[in-house]
Length: 399
Image (tube, rainbow, N blue to C red; front, top):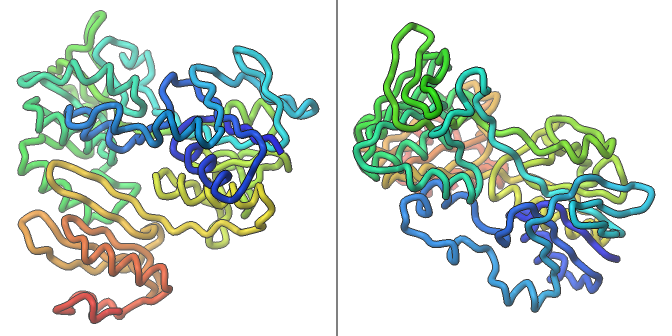
């Protein structure tokens, strides 16, 4: 069985490795539009942008590994169509036949519209290596950066910029930062951390447009104020890459819709990672995380080889900002009660999410023990009494 994987990121690398580890002897071909072999994305907006990590350390596997595992990398090649009847993908360089096809296409950053000045020079997004290579030379001490968007990408960009000596203002249109992904208590900890490091945060603040002739020179706010800027980073979220799947007639539902095995509406086509939605807790979800990309890709690889194993997501995430690490276990959506614990330092603590008496998520800032114990409890289906969480002298007691 010849397997083709379209998209050359974390999910593709994990899937290829798993297929070989499970004894698959057929051809494996990975096709990606970027000219660089699969690499880690999380360090791009942190260690790589800071100049603390080179490209060699970003790569998920060395060139020797791909050769030894007989995985063909076709880089700098774009898949333009899927030929169902012919069981082949069409690229800008030819046709590649497959017996099984996996779409690990990831997600694309949202851009500010051109009508708002989003096409001006000096306006950046942070998603792939090319984005960060374009941004890095602009991050010079003393320059004025405006970050649009108070999610994790925007906050991480703001933190790196401050460490590099830029003046940073972050603008969030919603009433608070992290409004879609975290409880107010977690947002409070992160806001305090950023303000302590000199980031100006403007919440409940809408932008009207960016200003400048050819290059951005500021941001007009909806309330009439004008903020000068030397560069702008738009951290306004991502959208799953589904164009190829849509053109091929695959079913979409907040991404490429997969069944519990990771198979799309075409039985010969599978999907995993940021581009894929899958059944979860009686509904469907799509997760944008390294953990999900790895776990789902490995499960799909097993199922391509006949395992018949339903994917059970165990969500976990992290975000590095300044010298602080935010670790998240579980999904906090739908909570009805929050319990907080203070941490050991000035910027730290944990937030425990409950829904109907069940522990569903934990956010831990500079509190690795709370994260690890919370993660173990959630995965074991155990829910300690909220009062016990608040009052426990030693969190191990909760186990």
